[in-house]
Length: 138
Image (cartoon, rainbow, N blue to C red; front, side):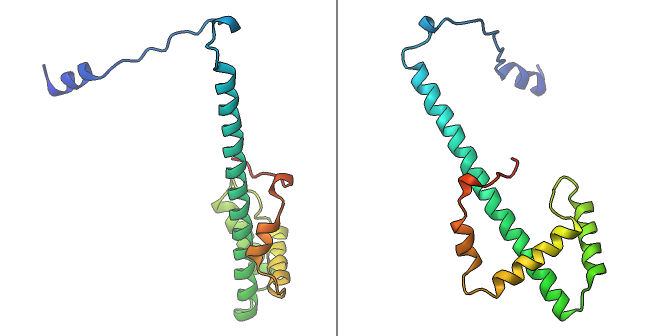
């Protein structure tokens, strides 16, 4: 037998058996409780993932706004350059939403508004009631 054949014979083959209808009486006594715990855990993990994703997107948008603002000041970037930047970002990340010309200008405006504030942007992001916000698609 070749090495390849030996490797195949050592692998276990798992065959998924069709699942028939199981009556509630046939299920283990703790099944409903275990199922509820698992469903709660999935929901909690999904909520945490959405919160983290939203926080990261806000940080990204503020970074883009900061970059555009600084380039406008130091390198004289005008509307046409920002329009091109938005177009190039959309081309590079076609599955991502949020890189329209208008949104990139909004990112700059939001950054400039918060940069002039005495409150840290990180603190403000922490105050957002994430349960009420829309979740980023996962």
